[in-house]
Amino acid sequence: MTAAVSENSEVTVLLVDDNPQNLKVLYETLKDKGYRLLIANEGEKALDLAHRHQPEVVLLDIMMPEMDGYEVCERLKADPETADCAVVFLSALDDLEAKVKGFALGGADYISKPFQSQEVIARVKTHARVIRLERELQARNRELQSDQARILNSISEGIYGLDENGTIEFANPAAAVIMRCPVEDLIGRNFFETHFSTAAQCPDGLPVNATCRQGVAENQRDIRMLRADDTGFPAEYRSAPKLDGEELHGAVVVFRDITAELEGERALEEARELVQEQRDQLAHTSRLTTMGEMAAGVAHEVNQPLTAIANYARVSKRMMAVENPNLTLLQETLDKIEAQSHRASEIIRRIRRFMKKPATGKEVLSVSSLLEDTRQFAEVDARNNDGAIELIVPEDVPDILADPVQVQQVALNLIRNALEATRTAESDLPVEVTAQVTEGSCVRIEVRDYGVGLAEDAEEKLFLPFYTTKDEGMGIGLSTCRSLIQAQGGEIGFERPEDGGGARFFFTLPVAAPSPSTSDESSCGAV
Figure 1 (cartoon, one colour):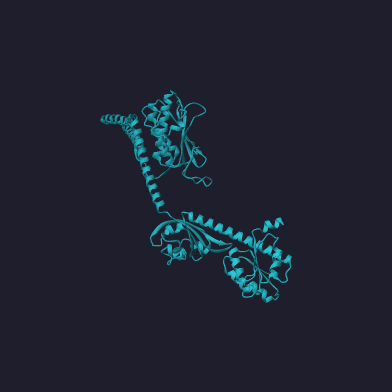
Figure 2 (cartoon, rainbow, N blue to C red):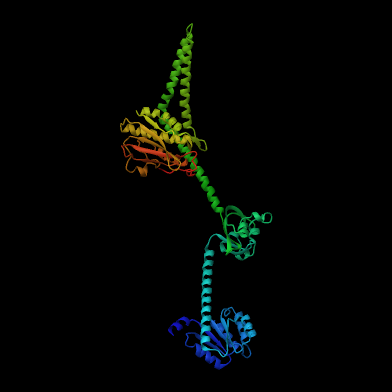
């Protein structure tokens, strides 16, 4: 009894019969089953009770005066408040036509009189459970629809639900804001004709068309869409097919106005260009500073071949002044003049190439040639610091893709720092410049010195702008080096050698032509 009451405590059953004896029998049959029982002895009263209490089950007599059970059933099904109740007809009529008529009007079941108590109990229990589950499901659906509506209304992107012809069946508030018209004005419009001026000319090539007609998901950015007032805006959209099993029913389109986003991207690109221009100017200034610091040594470097040329020219003049000059010796002297002029020209060429602003773009560079050129340029510093430079580049090191001027500037800066550090430590070991291939299609170039080493907090400060350990340094050298290497797609850093003092600075650069087995990435991380 307790289980029955608990199961049926929220179930209402309406008993309708013009015969008091029949009502009494029905009432006595169901009163202990835990149902809430309502009684009506005629049609109008039954309709009033049903409208006010929405019973799950109605046991309805067919043969009643004034309003029979068929009319009551028909009116119950026409009322939204009672349309879902289960109508079980009660009648002594046992012909097939009467039953068919009852089912046609919306009846759920049929019990013949005189009825048996167990049959009534079983059928009421079954229909009550079904109606109760249906109402719970409807309530849950309404709750889900309400949650869905709240979610769709809170999304800042416009959302459309389209049928297979592109007719807008649903639009959220954000779509109305973007379109600058009410939601109700969007419903029923054709998506293609509303948003694209070329809908009539090329319907097959329109965005979302393939999703609506073929079920192909789409995603495009920076396409021009029209608003309701025919003004245009740049948009990004994503469309997904609306499927019911295997059957296509149109598309769901999510779109947004990216006007502000594109403006921000343009502003960011302009800022990047400005930063790059300033970086190039700073790098050029750094080269000029380096050249100024090396001026005395460079002057000596250029003066040597010029002095030799002058001396050989004087010798040639004296040889030509004799009556029978030695033409062979004169030819050798003139060849020496030519060789010294080429030497001076090469020195000036290296200086000019180092001083110029780099051209736009990168080049395929030989690592050995680039580092040898840098080593020769750094010989002035090597002599000034009583040091030496040892260059070790294996033959299998591939070419790199980089800006030659900027890479040479970085390498020269690191070599000059290494020479100064080695001199400070009064070491007679040479500065070692090496190159090797690393994982990820990169070439790692190292500059090793045997100086006093680096401070414990070097990791935090060394590459910061305006930080320097030199008395007369500006602190922009390593900071500029990092910017230049990162612009080439590489990384720069340093290590403390485990086999002795000093420091090992390195930078990485991408190889010019990675093999098929390597990554296609154009950047190298620190290794």
